[in-house]
Image (cartoon, rainbow, N blue to C red; front, side):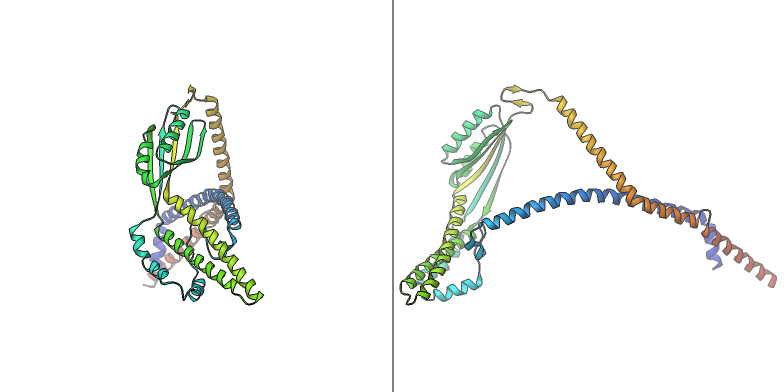
Length: 351
């Protein structure tokens, strides 16, 4: 015990240095936490706003979806898969023609033989005349048997969305990239083979079910039975119309590839010629950015004062108690030293 006390007393300065380093570390961590909290708060507010917009969009989309399709678990491009309803269908079609089963058995072979792909291309070029380029793009699309879904010119930019027959996509894509000085281009492919054949099979099944319900309706003996069959027939008809719409859209996406064509003029250039940079606007933007930085800096200082100052005060108080005027740790060292010296003197006198 005496050796420990002597070592503590001998390294008292080192203990004080370690304590000071610890206090400095607490201050730095508090400051960092305050700045991170400020940034996180801003990010959280933005994320909350974005989430609210997305949530409203999702609710609106659900309300706009067909009731029959939503009831059976359908969404845009989704595959209908309801196990309970499938069991019901199996019971209804237990005496269905054998050709239907043969078609289902050979479906996997058809999938491998005929892949259904959706092609999407992006072309970005630089040109000197947007109006002339717009006419060239129209002729390019017409040449390959396609059509333009949207076209717009805004300032220095031309944006065109074109649909090209899939069989001529590669040829059209290569020629489209030569309509100006190429900046970049890209192609993406989506495989919807399984979705296509599953949707087609479900649609055929619903049509067979509709035919059987119509035959049952003709032979219904009671009015109650007729009303029940009519309700079921209306539900099936709604599902068929929804699925036919999905199938048409999916088939159109497969048959016609989409190419996003973007053209732009050189920097500081319009169709009328070269335009000098707007120096006043640049300085205005600079001062706006400077004020934004200053505001963020002041908010950061406020967070530092609110969150870090209490830690600093607590650390200062602890240092005052341990090593300051009160000096409890110093007094403890001195008291331990006195006891050690007294014990040593008593031991020497006893000898």
